[in-house]
Image 1 (cartoon, rainbow, N blue to C red):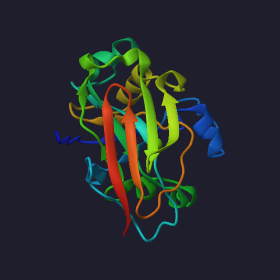
Image 2: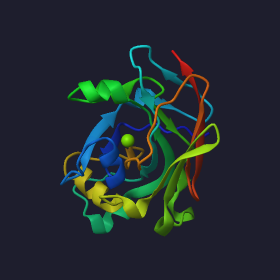
Image 3: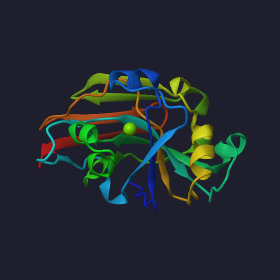
Image 4: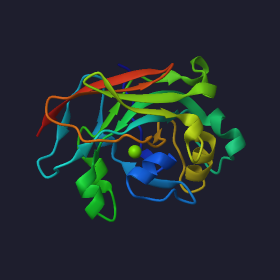
Length: 206
Ligand code: MG
């Protein structure tokens, strides 16, 4: 696979109303952003390792955006022009730790907690009909459509770039739809972005 090497991974939380509701949260007034460390990245076929300290590790299927050129204070109307490629992302989350920590560096940051597929250039993608599907052991668990995002991709790029410079190669994970659930040892989880591709990973207990 083509390796990605972002200087940072910026994620959006609660960006689908039904997912915010299933976690007992409100849809935020502004995008809610957090980081995952680049050290959490894995690719196709590499195992997601569940750390012993967590009793609930969830999948989160997401549409990932790879930045193509330096973005600083970009307007939403220009947002897409800063996108190089799209990629399926699994924002793996230690849900129990997320629920007890005020910041999510631990819950979101374990090694192997960011599975990504092969990036597909934006110009090869029909961005008017972006959808993400998560399967565990072949059974559909999540089905989301970018049209249901609270903040769309150009708005997310405007918001993040108003705060921090997005560098070429940076990865933005745009939030997960409803249906998140725990993984268990021996599962195989697959995130597919329609028209882009998928990333499939076995899950093992660490
Ligand atoms: Mg997420």
